[in-house]
Image (cartoon, rainbow, N blue to C red):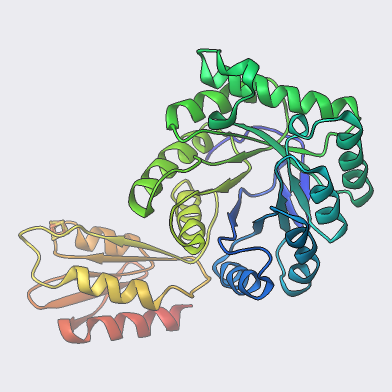
Length: 349
Ligand code: SF4
């Protein structure tokens, strides 16, 4: 079991980040925030998939005002992502944003930062601050040690808020390079007890971004570091949520829906495992209960994995032996394997 870093608990709407709260999964809407209908439609799909916090970009006042209508139609907490313009932050907060993503050091005049802090205090909403390796302040760009520069940049933002007696803070330290990200978070973990939002920024497309995100996020989580995650993919936000849960499930930090164990097949396999696994994966997508399903090609590892799962198959010559709760249940012809397996899974859930 992973021993998690002890942090301050911060609440984003009804979702706690840090303290002892489960590591939450978040994503970012990828449609124009000003198009309320499109944003709401996307968020609803993400809610169904288990997304727990959604962030929207707030590039202008129209987007900040759209938050009021969006909030009325969604269930999960919403984070307003703002760069530089304090008026957008204030408007987004007043329109119901549950958290602000803004760096106080980028706002400018201290009275403007104070105005943002005042509204965040009044509405009891946190602010996520952070450093991104790609947008370090000028005076820190010359530091050769990028993780150190990122931590310094974030500490400066933290200091500004703490000087205003504001500690409702979540921190992120993102880089597109995994090793830089790991070093930055590990360094920061020694310095503050605020909860961390983890992610590898601009990680890449579905395959490469998933691998990079999984390596980066899981390495930190395994060290007990990290309280909420966003997998940043050049792909649908639905993929981000799915990958996020797969990372957390693989570390046994969250339970959600089915866990599918599938053998990669080899020359011993005499049934079409790829097709069977694909069909089963599609049909079990909406199952919310945790259930372990093994789809194995032959008797070498098949019976062992199938017995270890809640339900599984071990393939034979154009047939499969179904195991339920660790015991052989029945032999089924290949053409009826998927339907029989799905029907038994449905009975079990
Ligand atoms: Fe090959 Fe059998 Fe292992 Fe699948 S379970 S990879 S078919 S040996």
